[in-house]
Amino acid sequence: MRQSPANRILILLKTDGPQLAAAVGDALGISSEAARQQLTKMAEEGLVEPVAEAAAGRGRPRQLWHLTAAGNRQFPDGHADLTATLLATMVSQLGQGAVDTVISARETETLRRYRSEIDLTADLASRVASLAAIRTQEGYMADYWQREDGSLMLVENHCPICAAACACAGFCRSELETFRIVLDAHVEREEHILLGARRCAYRISPTA
Image (cartoon, rainbow, N blue to C red):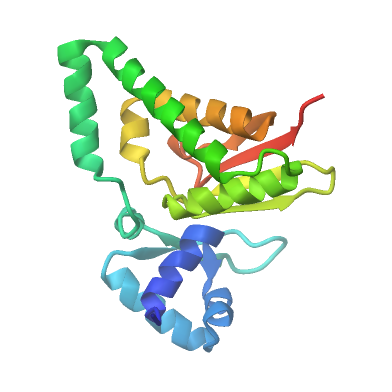
């Protein structure tokens, strides 16, 4: 199904971060002016906003287009409000231990499923590629690549369980541990949405 220009722009800003109007035009195969008109219309709808940032060297500030909070809400949120309310109620009524039990059970089930879908005998790059594909299917908009030093990067441009993670950081700790186990590798989180980053990014390297 063909996506509208607005949806393509939302996905571009979500996956690649803030963009110049010219870069948006290049990505969509339209002129800079046409891209600027589309962005202006989306700004009127509250989905994007222009932010002036100093250019390298001398010259006028660059105008980069960012997603707003409303723009980010166009992506799956895993029933955010209900999830946060249920977790808060669980903690108040049953205690933190009940939430920890849920997180542990989720981790066990996730590990079982990932192990069944990832070829654990493949090399690390192949395992990371499979994990990225699975996470994308789950709504995390994941990507991966190899760095010059040989390590791998796994990037998730969206978090469909962000509300749950905000309410209980144990979900993030559990996911990090799941990655380490299923990949049998060192995994370090370098960027974190909950700490204000645009995405979650993980540096992955073989175990000694």
